[in-house]
Length: 281
Image 1 (spheres, rainbow, N blue to C red):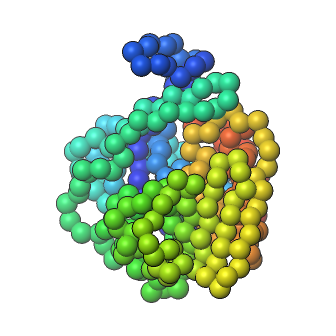
Image 2: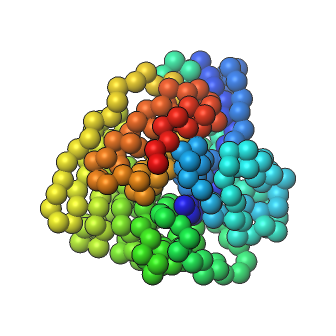
């Protein structure tokens, strides 16, 4: 499986209450882990037994070593498109409320982050599925085009509208959208996307296909302890399920179960071991 997109360094502090403006609070714990949509999806895919390769821009800054070590520890193969880039990687400052797992995130993501050279033309024939998050437009387009040419399904993590989606959507087989995702007309099916899925937090996940089929799949009711990265984990599980499960509803059901297990776990890297038992071959 090939996952292409953002890799950040997440500094995660668990707190009794999220701080108000101007307030200083003492954290209950501090963790540092690699983050970002494609990155957390890659960690989830690896935990579920897939051979996960992450294609991203990380660089040579000392902070990048933290992300590299985390990915290696969790079985994710890294392809860094800019291994000599001296700039620091994107850093996310995260606060997670202890009583319900609610979180706040401050991050610049990949904005204004550039790298020298062109993206190599990666053949996707060795992957059974490709996931892109659109944070590096040239990377997403190159990977999606290669996958399309090789007949490999492309899953899009559509958290928010990005200009690259005008070109990217016709290459996508499954667009998995957040509840806040909004696209300008025409709709995603009219743009050539065969399957559109929309998540809604704890609410049912809705899906539709270009042939007119549709439905929804309930989300398991759980006590949420930590919601950080839950959507990313859901997307990683969905990508795994695209290669293993026969129907849209089955794929969503599997992703829902994995994401529910993630939110039960406290911390940015407590969950891979917990979801590994849900591996389906």
